[in-house]
Image 1: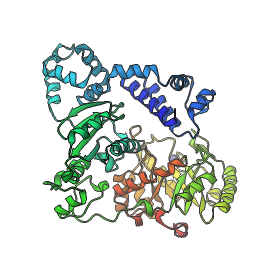
Image 2: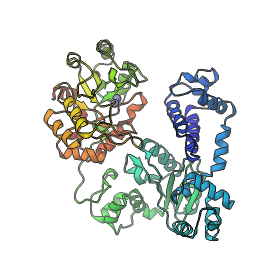
Image 3: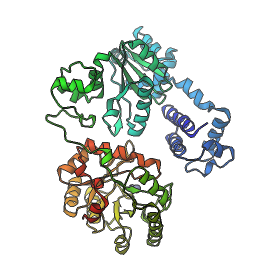
Image 4: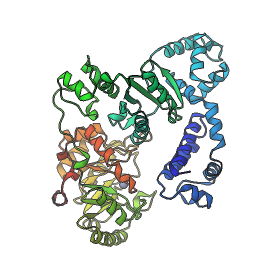
Length: 537
Ligand SMILES: [Zn+2]
Ligand SMILES: [Zn+2]
């Protein structure tokens, strides 16, 4: 059993625990364990067998027990039971109706139904009012909701990397294209859609229903269907007539506001054909949030990026060495990579003392001997202390090639204090970039109370760039904030903040987010050569 399969099962378990409204900490612990396992380079099944699995971060005796069961028997019995009990399609339909998972299951039990289709039948037959707690008013609301065309919306958006994995796999299996929020690279995807060209729609929809990712069909029409995954995520499939594929793709990509401004949308077999018939230039999906007129700019491309300026190594909480990170960045075609490990104030993980920064510098110099002309830059992700001072003395910062300043602890400060704290750090002559400027974690933590307009002013004045952090749960600045920053004349940096070699690939998430903010290559510092980069500020 490979790591991806193990991680998928743990994730499914976590989702079902959430649906079952079990202890939220347990569900979260399983989800985190799944993430760890997905990123572990060695086979986790072997670690389980030789009793080493608890060496992995976040895996305690409880999870170890489940893992042993999974590796030895190929299944987690309680997961199989929950899957039977919770009938994910019912839960999916319940979510659409605004019912909690528990309530959906209770209603299904009271009615003796086991699927979404049976629930619909029961509702149509007027049996809903037999359920304790459902009066005529609620019944009428539910029946009305069931009768309407459903809007496929997940309760909480899926992170972009996960959404691409899911929608991309479905599109590949059906020979179709990803559409919906995912194609517009929204930072949190609620509308997952796939469009395929099919003269025989029935066959295409049947293939969709049989995909391993889809556990149930909630809605079925002539050329479209709505399925749900085991996590209860709705995915829409459209089987377009080949001569209208372009039109369907445009419509299903959205946003709804953008599409409705183009109405009537003419029929064409491909998307460029639709735009041609509309007599307007093709529009990159990232810019399709709001209708707009005129020519879209030549947006930043992934190939414009010449180096990554924020990554971690085993010196702090990363998983690879300086040399391995450098080599992997060179293999990607980059010219440079800045190693930015943490400083002591970060707290939760290891941070580098001044002495360690110097010793790391020697290791970086050695790596540069091996990797030249590629350059590993001596960088740091320096904590901004609550009073705005930096976590390393100036004489150390002065030695470095690239200094990122970051707020980590104490994020709940009131706006004036937080803004002052950040401003103070940006005024250090050594700071080149403000990391994850708002501190938000998608679906988990809101933006810090920081006055971004003020941050933009200070950035313009000091020449400090603002990061577009490519971690899938950060994407910070967001597209909207990138646009505001660029309007203020501020430069941005597209970085991954990766803690692993594989994570260097998240550069695309950063670039796409910058594109959602209308960034061109000229707006982005790390599209420049090392010589130009070093001379700035
Ligand atoms: Zn950070
Ligand atoms: Zn970092």
